[in-house]
Each structure stands twice: as C-alpha cells, then as structure tokens.
Length: 242
Image (cartoon, rainbow, N blue to C red; front, side, top):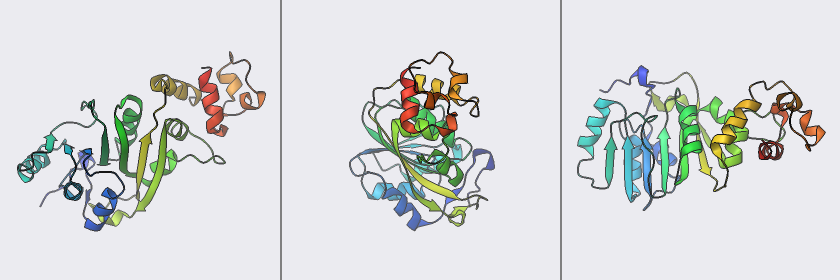
C-alpha cells in the first residue's frame, strides 16, 4: 500500500466517480493534456479513456514516477517526467490544457506562475483548498483582494463545485473545490500588472491617493477608495496609467 508523503502535501483521490466528474469539465479528446501530480493515476486513467492527443504527466515523487512509468509503458502518447512542478519548463509550442490536484502548499504560487508566464494554455482545472477558491472569486459588491482582481482581469474564473474531504486519503482537515481558469487573450504586460497589483495591495487599508500620489486626471471617487473597495473596471483604469 502506498503511503502518502506529508512533506509533498499528498492526498490521493479515492473516489472514481469524482475522477470522472473532474475530467468531464475540461476538453480532452484529441487535445494535449498536462496532468500535474498524477499520484497513483486515478484521474489519469479517466483522461486516457477520452483519448487525448498527448498526455504529459509531471510527478515529483520518485516512487510514484517509477510506478507510473511501468503502468503506462505501452502508451506511446504519454510522456512522464520526474520533476518539481514549480521548476518544470512549461513552454510548449502547441496549445494545451492543464489538470491537477495541487498540493495546497504550492497551489497559489503555481497558478500565478501559469497566469503570468504561461504560454499556449487554453484551459486549466485545479483541485484546491475551498478557502483559496473563494478568495480567487470576484464579485462586484464584495471586498476585492490582490488575487481576485488580478485573476479576473486576465482570465475567466469559475468555481465548478465543492468537494468533501471524505474522497481523499488521507482525509485532510479542510474542504476542497474544483476551479476552472481560462486565460484571456489580452495584450497586457502581466509581469507589470502583478507589480502594480503588489504595490497597490501592500497597504490595502490606505486610500489610492496616498499609495500613488502622482496619479492625475483620475476620478476623485476612485482616488478616495481603498484597494479592497475597487471594482474590476477601476482596477484596470488605474493600471492603464501605472
């Protein structure tokens, strides 16, 4: 029996119906699919059933990597890499989709990396901590944060459904959510946007006019707001003159 490694944040999915439900939410047939952290291959086997053009598996755990190599050695369309997901070279010359049950301790960082530096990514679905999924969600009348404004300006974001902790082994203390992110084809400097984003939310309780004193020709109603009270349009307008 495989024992999940706490150091790698491993929680294996053990519900086959849920695995089928997860893969039904992303385009797979004849597409290039990248699965990050396939683990024991529970989601992988459902992906294979839908016949992707190519399947790229990235597994950091050496033992699991070796098991996957044996398990899928007859599949010529599957490539398996024993690498750290945070260090892997994701530059692929063709359009591809990503699916992953991310370790909670790297989920924010890796999602932001994909959004800032990712190329040719069409769709991404991630299984993440429910609290994080809600933090990423943008609603006009609720408080904004450095994640939901940034993510929703450059992508289409959706919480697909919430997931009980009972479908994992070992059972985590927290609940999870399946989210979908589709990067928008916008001509925008994402590195600069993230720098702006970090600056503006460094002191989220301060008013905009005290954070950026050189802003002129900006509506005073916006300048007198705090970053957490900005809506998406105001956020973009401020960035355009950053």
